Length: 253
Image (tube, rainbow, N blue to C red; front, side, top):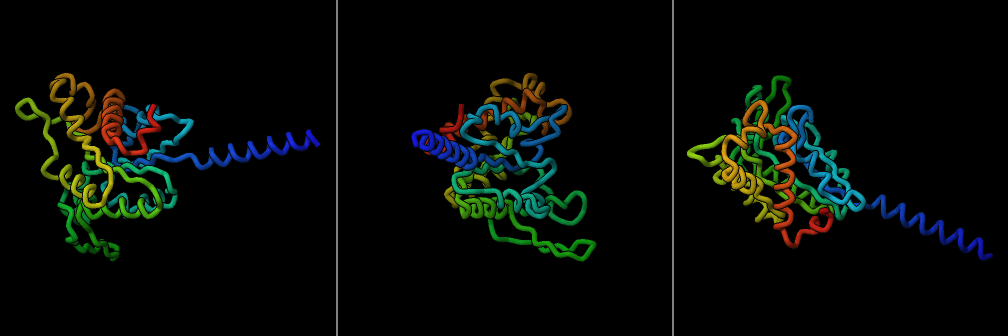
């Protein structure tokens, strides 16, 4: 009888541990190539950031995709896949902007572009194959991601885009008047967390100076090497720590 009790207790414990492991929260990351890249010469910060979290307590999934804007991340079905996997207690960070700036149309140059701002304006496009697409503002897409993530019980975090290696009069160019402002506006209106990664990184770049910052960018002014990606990942963690009431804090190393 005692042996049966011990075996039963062990079985229950095993089942409970398996359930807890299965229900471990997931930190989902979506974005563009500055978040996830080829991981050869150029890297996105969403890859090295996993090492900054306690992997025994949370899983990090980087679902960002190079070359995508808010518009194409949605239109290609990538957002739907992420949304399907979200569960209560998960976290979702989103960083877009680098590919959203062109005027939206069906050309190679404009196929990723969105309308500026955070309003409800739309532009209807007809593609060569006849299918119709309604293009929205940058803020509209972020708002959709936030609302749908919340509906699944996940905790959304909007992240402003990392700065490019572009200096003017000794200072890094920022996006406080456009994409950064629009991202902050949506976060405030929707009750989402906001990390001003653009400002956090740009402030540090200013202190480092153009020559040191240049070493992070092996090919162009947008994509960083692994050292630069680790630098940006650490800046994201700095931003998370600044969100004192954000539950994601408890999973950092």
